[in-house]
Amino acid sequence: MQNKKNQSNVGLMIQRCHKWRVRRKQFIDQARNTFDEIERERLLQSAEHCVRMTNAEQEKIDSIRDSKEKAAAVAAAEAEMKAAEAAAKDENTDTEKTDGDEEMGFPDFITGLN
Image (cartoon, rainbow, N blue to C red; front, side):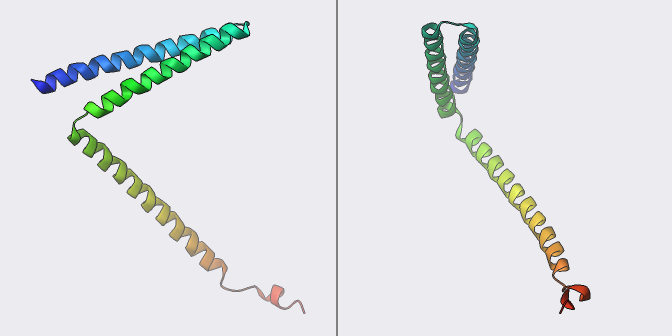
């Protein structure tokens, strides 16, 4: 039963995050269309408040996630990093081969300039 309760709580938190993001977008759009500097600053401060609220809700969501989900997310991130490192390593070995091919020596016309 606890899992269902957590799922509904997370669902509500996600809805609140979405609401705060929509409000932020509305404030920023209004600020773009406002010519009064004081009103624009007030709207931008309201948008910043929405960002803080969104971040707070997101932290709550992240803290409620199951440890299995966190472990899976960390494992996926580590797998991506290893794959990126392996791809970079493959690219480096390819460039090393081409560099080695170029270092075979100077052609005769360059060495016979004296």
